[in-house]
Length: 184
Image (cartoon, rainbow, N blue to C red; front, top):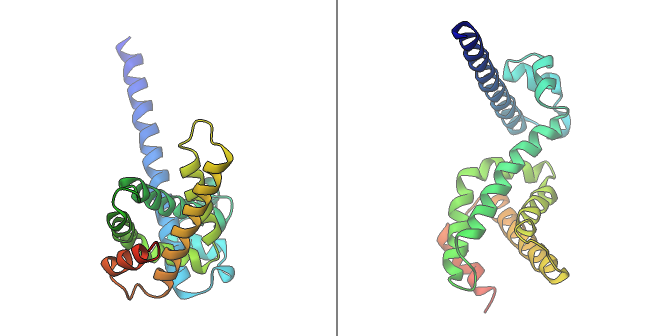
């Protein structure tokens, strides 16, 4: 019985080791793509380029992703989740300034990645990701909920895109003030 337990324990360690290895491989691939996108247009980057830059084989690449767009979608999920999380910290109706300030402060660490995604024409996918998270909070959304959440996901995404692609010249505080004035 103890020998069987030891084998099971070793198998569990191996499984965890493989999971960690796959996680590291994915992170290397994502980082490699981001680095390549800083140097050249997304359309000109090949999977071979990504694998070489990441230091992984094409087999390892395909074990984790099917296409280079899949890598971007993985990055996109992180950005969309962060924006969604920020949108939920404060209600616009309770404290509009804090709502917007939190949004711009929270997106700042993801600015470089988000900017690359927008430049690779993934803005609509970011917006759809935010929308799906917002609408997913409803048990049975009605049409008005869908329109309201589409409005907010579109508005937030458009403002963030404009700010990021404008090289974030305005501070998060100034952006919050600007967004509050839009409702006056």
